[in-house]
Amino acid sequence: MQSGVMQQGAAFSRACLSRGKMSWATVAFFALLILPFFEPRVLSVFVSDAFSVIYDCWRVLSAGLIAALYVVRAKKRAYDALGVAVPLVILCSTFLNAGLGSATDYFLWIGDWLPFFTGILLVGYAREAKKKELIWALMLVSSAISFANCLFVLMFPKGIPIGGLMGSVYFLGHKNVAIYAILPSVGMSFLIDGNRGRICSPRTAVLFLMGLIQCMVAYSATSIVAMGLFTLFALLSINRSARVKTTMLYGVVGYAAVFVSIVLLRLQNLAAPFIEGVLHKSTSFTLRTDVWDGVLSIMGGSPLLGYGLSLRGHLDFNGFAYAHPHNDLLSVPLSGGILALALYVALIVLSATMLFRVRGQRTAGALSAMAVGFFAIALMEPLYTISWPLLLALCYAEGAESRDGASQSAVFASNNMISEGISSALSRLSRFRVK
Image (cartoon, rainbow, N blue to C red; front, side, top):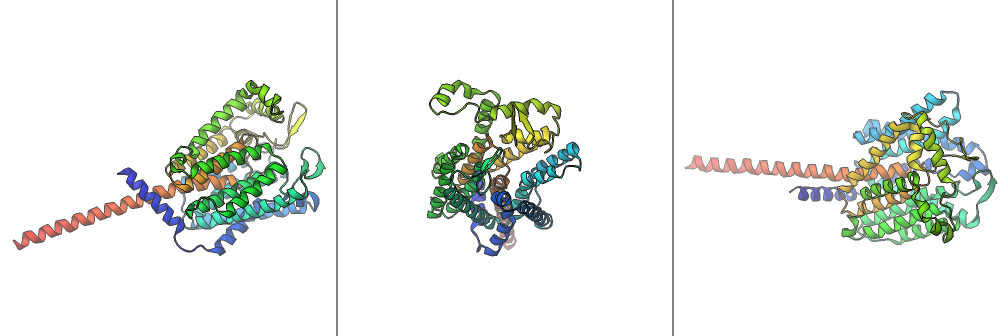
């Protein structure tokens, strides 16, 4: 009985996503709201610093408008409050550690954590009736940015040298940043294909090749691994029996296991002969283990709320200066302490759990494939991108729609049973009176 209701809920969810004509005006509106969160850093580096300020202002305006739309028109859920709490805790920690004297820390928050705040609320506003438009907007914006970066990579395979820690800059900045546009570009296109009953459209294939070219030419090992895992899980999601066994929830468990093995226990050292002798790579993952050790060593100084963004760009360990902890799960407690980490982990687990409810759907398979790709990035880089909170919130929305649809189907079924019972009782009563 419960399985039947859940199947009805899943059907209701698919019907909600496909019904009615799509509003391209709404797509354009969402695209304008998302666009400032994909800043072409090459402009502020080589043209003028003013572009950085312009994009910061655009992000703040976009976030303010989205927050207003959410407050006025969206159905409120505890999930949204949980998601918004993470960046707000980090903002409070920044104020407690730096006060109002350092404007740089607050500009860093706008770049690092305002996207998280905005992504959660944007899906919260759009999930009831505009989710299809939001998916298309994210696909179009990320695809345009990916295309621009691809052209830049082909023109400047080694980037444009600028010296310093970054070494060289590409269209989006560091070479590892491109994957934040590539994954949603390919993934959302693949999701749209699934909604239309297609395996892989020419559009998705072109976007995938375009992303692969960027990762190979600029050579980002982290991005290549992320693309590889996304591709594997996307292919598995085509088959239903494989899809239900490769859902995001299992990806969360896998990420936790790899995090403990590599970041905490350093089991990669056991494979040093292969990593160093065959692959010619370092078991320190380009000195990342030094910053991991350093961050873990200082967390005890402010365990509850962390250090805010006062240490962003000032992590000096073993004679090397790091901009961030080079791991997503370490960046959260460093900036927001145990409180922010608990909220963040709860949000991820809740998203994965809700998506698990509809693990048999093609859309769930596409979302899970993207999530696994982001988990691969999260091992080596913080996820300072709007693509990540948008994906988390879409995973939750997919399962929530099914649950709401199942509840609505159950209500309809209950109402039908009551109506039939009343009709039957009245019929018997009328026959009794005739007799």
